[in-house]
Length: 374
Image (cartoon, rainbow, N blue to C red):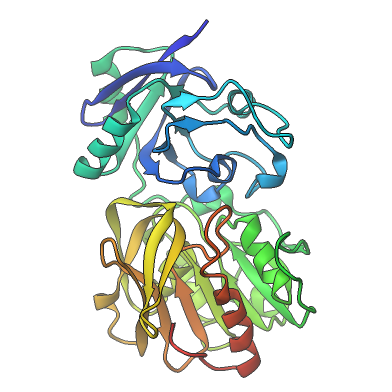
């Protein structure tokens, strides 16, 4: 017997459907993801903390859940929205069904709604807060609760997803040759994904992961050859405590940042960040390298961006450009071995067009200076 569930947005838009996850009332910012597969990776991406994700592909759950696909230890998002949740898992690797996993994790799932209408609405009106409920089914009541729900602006969600203490990571990518370990990298965990760590290891790095609240002195005490700034959730403008510590590191070691790490570096360089209308979430975002004009198909998950025009006090150049909306996708310091990208070169699952960036980081460590431009 299906349990009725509803999704209400802060502007009063309302969708009735069926529950296939945890029951109760839950809130979060509603965004959409255009990937056709990879729902276990999406659900376990810490960058989705505080958000409810609507999948644009209509059938989700058809290959079940396998722990080997996880990008972190658990589900982080606040709700999962699909057109149809498959009751059959056609995959020999499957360990459990999607709905059962959501229930175990205490995360709501809603199916049977018009996800196409929801996505079109978000594209036109922008990402906004929403409530999924199996208890209160009243439209006006839920819209009021959604409107009162805290958004992402000004929220530091990194403190909710970062590790509690330092640890070492040794597992490489399963589909890439593992190079001989040559360099020690300290990775600042703002919500880091497993495949990023695997990428660093596969390209010849010993990796030590430290909490996002680690001080510059603590990071340098590991005597690393390079420093990595990870992806993560929430508003980058709320992370002044991280920005201040990275400022102390900027001329000390080679630095590579991904996603939130890119936004942190943008602020270190004096730039401002801003919220995108509905963000970039999916595995098919076209990005152009400014040096070669080559286009990469990239995996992305972010709702904020760096305004490159606000960076005026540092010799920094744009290295990558989003071809959909012309937003900044990459930065590089012209004098220091520091660079970053807004997208995810580890792409799990997704295109591997951008894995060269891990190699570039290693080459930059070897040279001790900037390597190329893009």
